Amino acid sequence: MSVKTEIFIKDRADPFVMRSADGTYYFTASYPMYGKDDPEGYDRIILRRAASIDALATAEEKVIWDEKDCPTAFRYVWAPEIHEINGKWYVLFAASGSAENVWDIDCHIISCKGKDPYNDPWEDLGKFTACEGDGFSFRGFSLDMTRFECMGNHYVAWAQNGGNSNVYLARIEPDRPWQTVTPAMLLTKPEYDWERVNIPVNEGAAVMIHNGRVFLAFSASATGPEYCIGLMYADENSDLMNINSWKKLDRPLLTSADLEGEYGPGHNSFVKDENGEWIFIYHSRDEECFCGRCGYAGNDPLYDPCRSARKRKVLWDADGFPILNG
Image (cartoon, rainbow, N blue to C red; front, side, top):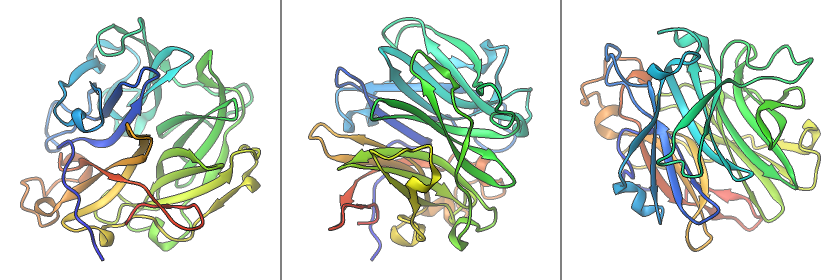
């Protein structure tokens, strides 16, 4: 049975919400292009903050960084994520290494110069770098980086072209979170039919750790109505850099068929609300866009602004696995 979810924040794809050490919630997302000929869009990093998740919907949105002011990153700024690491603020994002070339995308990082990420200035730390001996990572098409901590170790996961768009995992050190300290490990690649619709894709990793398990959600297939969310998991005490520690579900957790009036759910983030309950924030398109009435039907799906952020509560089954389509 399909369910309906109202738009949380309109025209904001790849939504990311985190709760800081002081309890403040922060929201960022891809700033859209309004059609393929839009001279703006995909060119900045925006940030909202509020005392609750719900209040983010009406919170003031600021531009904290713009590619026009950066010599190392250009337009096609996608999927920013804000992280508080050892008391310092960083944003991970994808950007092109050359003007107007979407195929030159790689993972980048900026750092806040002060303690207030909403008001203090940010500085460019350049493209994310790989450890010595890793000749693969961040050399070509990489994007959608996320960061998480488990049992005292810090990790980044990202998507990269390894024949297809696959998800990779590596460790970092918190005092230098712009560089991996282990070679990349292939975590998941498109294997099942639902991961290979139109384009074989795994991307948009998001992590939550719950009741002893590390759950890593990812998005699959092309970015139209076929977009959906899959899942991998591991024991939190296992060696996460050993692929044998991970298992992958053979079915998606959330698809367009699970939803009413929205299409292509994906690129989610996880965050706990004020009551300690897990919430997932994701994007999807509405009925108007799906039916071609939005005014952008002739564009590649990446160039319409119709992906909007929505939020839902994570439910749990009897075996302790997340339910996203409940």
